[in-house]
Structure formats: structure tokens, C-alpha cells
Length: 361
View 1: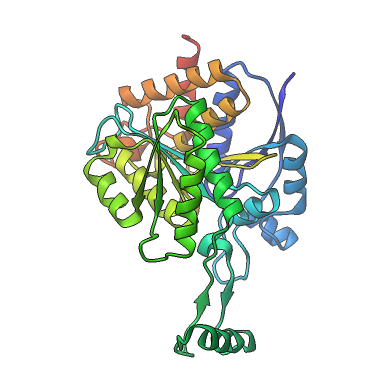
View 2: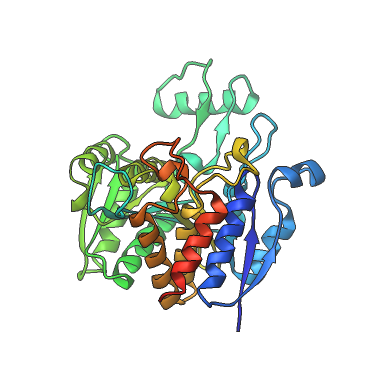
């Protein structure tokens, strides 16, 4: 039976890289029943939202989504489509592999990290208070009364909260991923030395969960030290599990270690649904130019194939991507030694080259 998948092309360069990715996924021989749903700038103009309800309903039906990048309009009061998807589908785990491949320009070799980021709470939960409002004044008074700490009233405030339940499930997700994929170690990343209540709870809960997995090595690192460690000796780390904000920062740092966001895949996974997407933005200034690198979305497609238990197809597609990168011929301008290299190819030509390689194995 074909796999039912919601395909969200996105906007900007999203439709081009989505089409290229769809072609290479179909070239693996796996059959798909695509339910194409529009989201982004075009739906904002037509329907007043970047993420129509029909997109959510489609993913609830198919249980799997493949999404191109979507622009979040600045200054229009529109919430990010990514944040909305995570909230409404309870996609609590953000999974970001970072792996070096031959042919990528990087200062490092043999990096094979997996970032597991909690997706639902922390500062990114969006609980904020604007200065001058009655709610803010009430909050200031309560803080002064209960803690003796008097905050400058000409301030704004964001609330950071971390719960036992959300921490436990994200740390368990990291350990279960490590066990299923034969990874050697899980590192919990925190700032519990300063934020003793919130990050302290994250750390103590991680310690408790780790005791349930004696077959997997466990350690913890303070987040600023973790940044230094990743720059100095990234090969010593394997699976990292982090609260929301630190996970966002470390994910991009890790992408920088391997050669940039152009090859950085991602997934948002919950108990019932999963959405796979490239990490980079929509780059609207390049829309329609057949210029941008589709490999991050193609590597996200590899992750989706594994999620669908099409492991042979995932291995073959990853091998085709690796060989294309190593050869360095049929790649876009950002993967060339110089961005003005006349040998750079377009988005659709990258897909053509990968499809041709898939025919050989």
C-alpha cells in the first residue's frame, strides 16, 4: 500500500525544493499517496492565515507530513506556522542530526551528532507580558511581594517554565532513539548551576530517566561549556537532549560544524504524528530561480523513510546523496568552492543527478 503523506510545499523557494524532494523519494521505488496542502504567504493573502486548518486536519489523517520552508510575516501578528504545527499536533520532540559528509566544506571530520530538543515549553512557550499592561503590573506586584525582588517597571517579561512530564518524555525519547539506533551515549544539556529551579528540575528528571537505561552511557553538561566542547572536540558527543531554547541554539551550532543549514535535516515528532522539514528558511529572494540547494529537505526525506520503516530505501537515498556530495559535480552554488563557480547546477538538476544514481543500486 502507498504511504499517505501530507506534502506542504511552503513558500519562497519551498515549492522548488519540495518538488525536487518528491521526485527523488518516488525514485527510490517507495509508493506515496501525496495529499498536497498549501500554507504560507499565498494562503495568508487568500485566507488570512499562514496555516489553514485543512493542513492540520490532513496531517491528523495521514499522520506524516513533509514540509517545505514557510515564511513567517514580520509585524503582522501572525504566529509561526512551525510553532502552530508543534502546538496543535503535540510534536514535542525536535530531532536534528548533524553529520559530516565527504565533499562538504567543514573544519571537522567524523561528526555524527543527534540533537533532541524539547519543543513545547521553556521560554519558547510564548508566555510574555508587555510593560504598562494591567497584567504586567499585577505580576510585578506579586513578584515583589513573594520574592522581595523589585523589577524595573519599564521592562517586558517572558516566563520560562519546565515541567517534569515534558522533561521525562523528551529524555525518554532521546534514550529510546539512542537504543533503537545503536548510539553509545546521551548527554543532558542545562544551566542548572544558575537556574536551579527550572533547569534544576530538567537535570534531576534526566538523571532519574537515565537510571532506566543502564545499557547507554549518560552524562550532563552546562550549556555554555557544551558550546565550547562542541567546537573543541565534537567527536566525543553523540545524542544531546536539551530544553527548547538551548536546543535551538545548539542545533544551529551543530549545523555550522558540518557545513551549514543547506544540508541540515529536521523532524518534529510526537506520540501520534511526525512532520519532516529542512531547517533553513524560505529564501524568497531566490524563489523561481532554480538555484537553491534541496539537500536539507532530501535528507529530511531520508529521515521520513526511516520513520515509515522503509529502511532500505532510506539507505539507498542517503548513499546517493553522499556520493553526489563527494563527487561535487552536480551540486548547487553554495556547495562549490566558490559561489560564482560556473559548474554549479540548479535545484532540479540536483534531483536529476540523485535519481540517476539511484538507478545503479
